Image 1 (cartoon, rainbow, N blue to C red):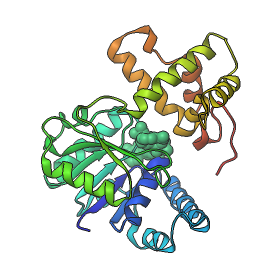
Image 2: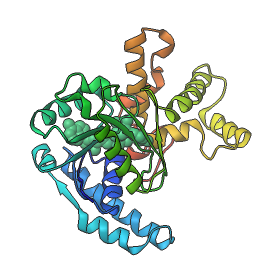
Image 3: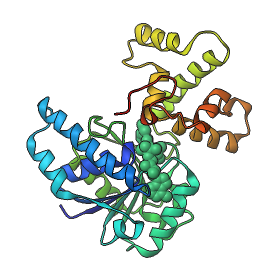
Image 4: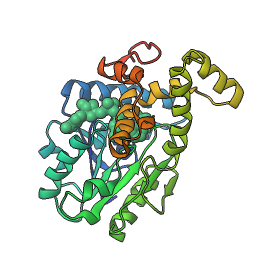
Length: 286
Ligand SMILES: NC(=O)c1ccc[n+]([C@@H]2O[C@H](COP(=O)([O-])OP(=O)(O)OC[C@H]3O[C@@H](n4cnc5c(N)ncnc54)[C@H](O)[C@@H]3O)[C@@H](O)[C@H]2O)c1
């Protein structure tokens, strides 16, 4: 194991990505600007791992590795110190991600992998504003990362072979199936397919054709999906759908791409789905 990993952003994704890295045996540091959230997530993921051990999905060594290899950091400077591999998983906002990468790419060694877990922002959009653009890559996990067996990898044309190979190695060592895209595309494979389904569900709801609960029920029963599109939106976070849609609208100017008013209202109200206890549905805080 020759990578030291920094995960930036300790929300629902980052906290579990850091756990995957630590469980795989990598020395890992996790940073979030919200200390309270970071401490809460650390314990929450620990409980999740214990749960998976009880269910015989994980063995005890995973928990030992989590505790021994994962350290929390309370500043960007601290989390990136002496690291060879960065995975960014902060909020899905281009300006926030860019500010982080601009700052760290100036001070970190040129061999450091700069991976983003963004759902829709491509590595080339970030790399072109940063130093050593050949080390930027998308490493796209799925929620919840400690359960979901897939990482989609995509990269700008000028990527260095070394960065790509090391990203594939870390992904496989995390025990995940890996799909490497031949070209960059916002949303990769899975989210492009999913967006088509969710957009149509939002359209049906907006037109008043059916209640969202009934649209979910129809998709679950009629297509045999485990979750309906509104449930899935709540799980991934309504802010992620909103900002992705907003970005598309700002780029295309096409009214069809404008985020729906009901989605905007929920996001501005802080009703982001499971992580805040309320989205389309209500949830008990985990
Ligand atoms: N939720 C999903 O299903 C999913 C799946 C794949 C990828 N993603 C991507 O993962 C990223 C994170 O999503 P999430 O669901 O974990 O969101 P989240 O809201 O749970 O977590 C985001 C975290 O970023 C932190 N943050 C914000 N600004 C920061 C900064 N400047 N420095 C450090 N921390 C900062 C917040 O405090 C928060 O804890 C997004 O880019 C999203 O597109 C999400």
